[in-house]
Image (cartoon, rainbow, N blue to C red; front, side):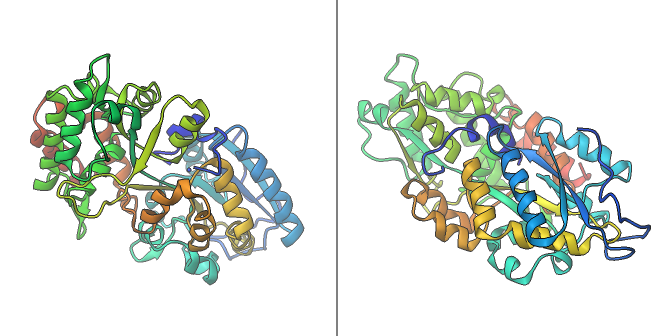
Length: 420
């Protein structure tokens, strides 16, 4: 996922109790000519191209899954695991060369759905599986009324704070409003010794994730009613507040160029009072044992109930001659609790099903994430334009810190309205 792929290093860490090749020829033998899946001779082998979340777990899981899939269904699963650094290019090349895999694990699906390349849930997803997937992921996996983006795992954000710095600054509890956050950031920065109140990453790695958490907690949106709302009054207010934090020097230097990994490193060093994080960060902190930290819901501007930014990646199914039954069997097995939740737990992320939420509730460290996950808000991944808009946000949003927040968001709004 846009967020999870960048955290592959920390996501691969052992998290106590969890926290969040050459182009193939597709289905191989048994494939016959046809315009779409379900036509022609039924195939017995399908290909999965999967993103590598961690060196330790991803390939091991899919290899074991392929064996179980063969034993239970009689079909063969050809597995190709690809680094997040290369999977966009490799999968795009496969599809352009008419060699799409049968199943592709990627962080965007809508452009393929728009081009009519994918099966929707009615064709390949068992009804019991669809009813178990969390409603928020069904919502964001739906394009023009059809569910195409089937989630593999998820993450959700929360508010991390340094208990030691809070105590030194005389702060009793984590903030519930932005005014309280600003005041706390000033107190922590005033401690000196290189401490900063809030680690603000608006650099190109994942500025859309940081900004999402803030704008959602100011009543803002990226899109509303089918229209882009990037330069709404609420969003301008949000970016203006972030610029204020930077101008008051309660953040690290140059937040416009700071990536999320750098903000995490600053927090892990004990020099940042507050940061937006997620379960893999907790895992890294638990392993390091250097920072006494707490996790809480992110404060809203007005103190209203906190909203969280959620992220998921997708296991999308390409229409190919004769592959429909084998693809459906793949999903029927993957979404069994002993499969999907085993994968998610090993990789250090969060569940995508209702039964998964129930299962993971036994870990108290996940409560803050699981309580908000069913109502998490995502970026508009159901819009084929989003990938281009996201890139523009990553490259340009930080300009609102050194320049004009409104002019920056006006530019991004224009990019979105022009289709990227």
